[in-house]
Length: 146
Image (spheres, rainbow, N blue to C red):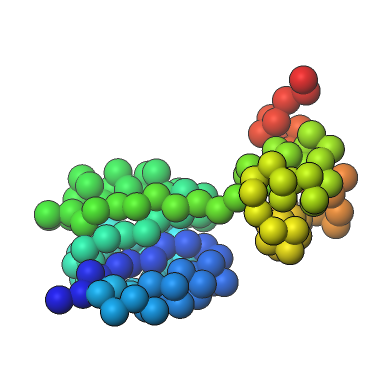
């Protein structure tokens, strides 16, 4: 019997990518998807997945609080795998002034992968360029000088 997984991430492309990777395995099936943490408990009760792949940063209810809610209120709760992307690690490196190539070296990623993450950071922050993203990172306290 395959392992059933509930995918929880606010980014449709991330969910689609995870779904493609997981469904390529013969012993895993994706039972369902949720775009925010508030949807997790009802779906976990309804679908009874073996595993929840939970993003940390989501609207309405973040992954940490959604995990707590599942563990508190779902009988025989599933295993929860907390997943997140490199956008944070990437924003911190951008804030240090690193180029895409330098970020790729630091994270042992391909340059195109870093470029994709930088674009995602800009989109999530509503920033038009790296400078605006770095300013937002400092103003929010996500990174601090020094």
